[in-house]
Length: 209
Image 1 (cartoon, rainbow, N blue to C red):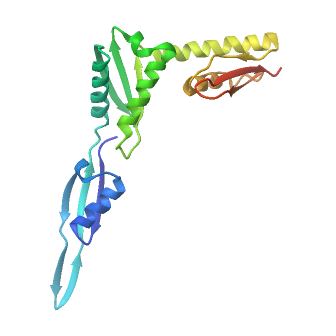
Image 2 (image 1 turned 30 degrees about the vertical axis):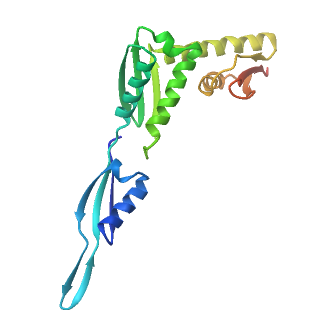
Image 3 (image 1 turned 180 degrees about the horizontal axis):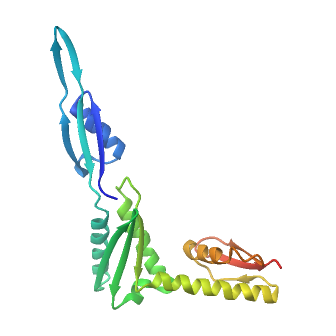
C-alpha cells in the first residue's frame, strides 16, 4: 500500500486542511500539504461568487521504516546481531530475521517471536490509518511449526479414534489452535474445541465415531 492522499475543500485553506486531517485521524506534522486552490470572491456585474479553497493532503506510508527502526533498536538492546528484511505484500508486512542466535528470538514454542511480532504490530499501527498485519519469522520457523502442528493434529486424531477417548493438547496461542482446528475440520470422525482461559487455553480432540 502506498501513500494515502485526501483532497478536501473548505471556505478557507485552514478549514480544508482541518477536514482532511480529521478524515485521516492524524496531526498536521504527520502529513504533506499542497494547496490546490485558494479561497476567493470574484465580482461579476456586481454579483459576488465565492470560490472554495482546495487542498491535497498526503500521509506518507512509513510502515516499513517504522518496523525496521523499532526492530533494529529492540535487537540492539537484546545484544543480538541480526539482519532485518521487510517486504510489503497486500497490506501485510512480512519480516524475516536472520541471526546466528535465532533460537533466542524464537523462544519456547515461538513465544518470544510471537511477543516481538505483537509489539511490532502495535508500534507500526499506532498512527497508521490503514491497518498493516505484521508477520515476523526467522529461519523458516513458522512454516516448520505449522507442519509440526499439522502432523501432531493428525497423529492425536488417530489416537482419539483408536482409543475412543478425548485427547487434550498442551496450551497453545490462538494462531496455533487455529492450525489444529483447520487441519482436522474435514475429519468427520472427530471434533475439536478449545477449553480454558488464555494463556492456558488448549484444544481437545474428541472421537465422534
